[in-house]
Image (cartoon, rainbow, N blue to C red):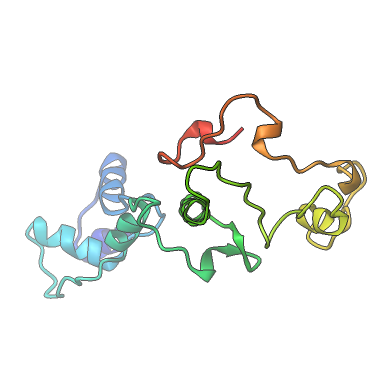
Length: 181
């Protein structure tokens, strides 16, 4: 783009002007500038290339996705880590999934009774003696890749109520930084 400005438009920009222009056009900091962004900027400043502006601006779509609340986020198979529906590749997908799990689990609880513990059927051990699931939870192939890493026999997967005496609140009133122990 800067070569186009310099060689085709015969405009020499100072370093700060290049930085300002790049910051304006690459507003998400994604290290790329779409032609549509450049075209829109050019039209705003009186330089028309007779190219129509696209309605499907990629940066606008990415911006909308980044600003979407986890409550509105739709988890898809592309969010799954190694195909596991309860291991996710982004914080937003994880918050959306845990909210979905929590509210589904809560709906199946007996009214007036405490909500039972959630056991993940896709990830982690099902009980304390579940060594096979424990080792595959910790290591992709079930074997320690290097010496010095924890042995699955020595690891305890604990519920939060066994770790802290504080009442457990998790996503029932929205996700917060204190939802992780």
